[in-house]
Amino acid sequence: MPTAVAVAFRFFRMEVTRVTPLGPSLVRVTFGGPELTDIASGGRDQSVSLFLPQPGARDPLVPVEAGEDWWHAWRALPETERAVMRTYTVRAQRRTPDGGTEIDIDLALHGAGADAQGPSTAGPAARWAARAVPGDRVLLYGPTVEDNRAVKFRPPHGTDLVVLWADETALPAAGAILESLPPGVRARAWLEVRHPDDRQALATDAEITWLVAAEGAPDGLTAIRSAVWPGARAPYAWIAGEAGAVKELRRHLVGERGLDRRSVTFTGYWRRGLSEDRMRAEGAGAE
Ligand SMILES: Cc1cc2nc3c(=O)[nH]c(=O)nc-3n(C[C@H](O)[C@H](O)[C@H](O)COP(=O)(O)OP(=O)(O)OC[C@H]3O[C@@H](n4cnc5c(N)ncnc54)[C@H](O)[C@@H]3O)c2cc1C
Image 1: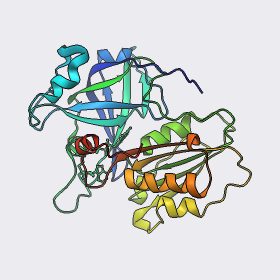
Image 2: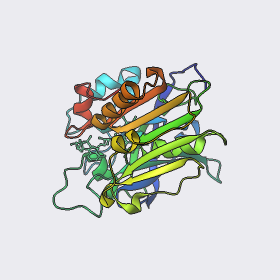
Image 3: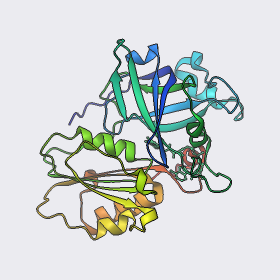
């Protein structure tokens, strides 16, 4: 795996070209636009920042003209006017027949979708995703080089078993990771979703256990705790999803299973009861 980590990121203007429901809890939004020709996703769990317009606005308000100081300029705008910034994963990047580039981002609806029961507590990104239509405009802050610091899945040399845990927010990353593994790499994945129809067909020969909440499946910690990994001498674990669950799983892997800390990549993708803005302000991720 590459170790040199580059830092080249920039803004890309793009617009929705297709919306494909993936099940009750996730929607795939495909984006295109001339600027995307220069994007260079590193694949696997490549994360990016999405900037979404405020409800009722046509365009997301980000002072890109401030150059490297855009963050402070964006923060200085009133919260009700500036674009909503949220972190997502590039599920796929493709060339189009006309020589352009398009990317897929899979967004969890967490309550804002068709299966919404009662008033939704979903955040602005989930609400945006539930209503996205072709032509909607957003900004993305993402990489121009494939080897960049927002790719976290980096198994150490000699890894003989890849262990994954993901909830629905990290399913896009887990899917891209599994599909990127060279043939012959042993992998075991526990993927937690709400609904039976949230299961996806993934192009991998990894052993996958779908933990479907609506079917009364155990949570990831319970399932992984009772699993045996015969013959694995150098396992590498990648875990991402709700920050509290990630913390407990990491504790199990390092404390109870004895995995080397450097062999566990863990990221809190969201925290129950906190918006991403609050999570960022409180440093409440699990990483
Ligand atoms: C590196 C990284 C990569 C990510 N990749 C993806 C991705 O590809 N797809 C994806 O869907 N998400 C992804 N996420 C998670 C996503 O950024 C968060 O779920 C984010 O909070 C969604 O924003 P929001 O505006 O919908 O909700 P917010 O305004 O941030 O939060 C509003 C409320 O919703 C709750 N909430 C947030 N997420 C969930 C959830 N999944 N289920 C139930 N309640 C929730 C919060 O706890 C809060 O109470 C990623 C996060 C990180 C850090």
